Image 1 (tube, rainbow, N blue to C red):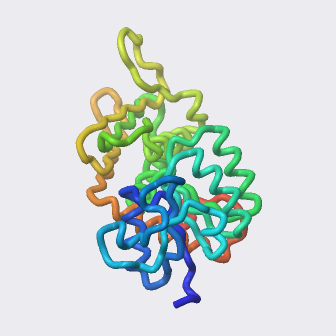
Image 2: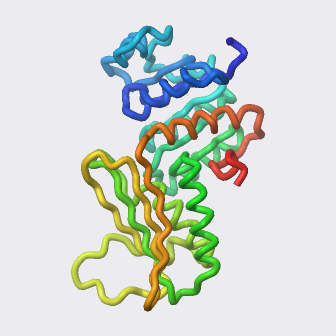
Length: 269
């Protein structure tokens, strides 16, 4: 059992953190060795299993990432940009795989992660599910096949707790569509239309964010031309798909050379 890769979960008390802990415990190829929370959180110093309303798991929630990472081979991180950037340096020091599902990262954040990736293995994706990553591939292929007579619009929906928009998955899809057309997304992205915006620019890629209720995640990529539309769609109904993908990424990264990877690499797509 002690030979299995040890995984630390950041943000252990959150919905995703708790789901990750359950997924690791259910996985015969991994073991939970640490659970992290911010200083002052009520879970710190207590057994994470008990905090989750179950049996003790023998893992005490800590607010000290340096001490916690010393015994880990991987850390899974679905937290916030600032916390993720800080963890990247610590994971690099520990030579641990850093699996990042955090969204809303700025260009500066990404540059700092790239620096950490010179010394550690980072697996980062806006979405960890197999279905979404297949959708990304399909989006690129369709964008390659269709010219700018087809307007591209990306519509995403999530629960009302989500704090960033467009979602990380929507941006993945936008990047795929832009790559298919051989353009830079930053040059053609069109977001948040409101008021007298004027006619749509030919070649733009539009984004629309819906927030409400407990929607897990829905993403549509629409290619619209006069007289016809093509719609590619993925609907997530259970967040467990993201947890399973993240654990798979943590195990896949064992023994990999330092660098930045994504779920396409993990899934061999």
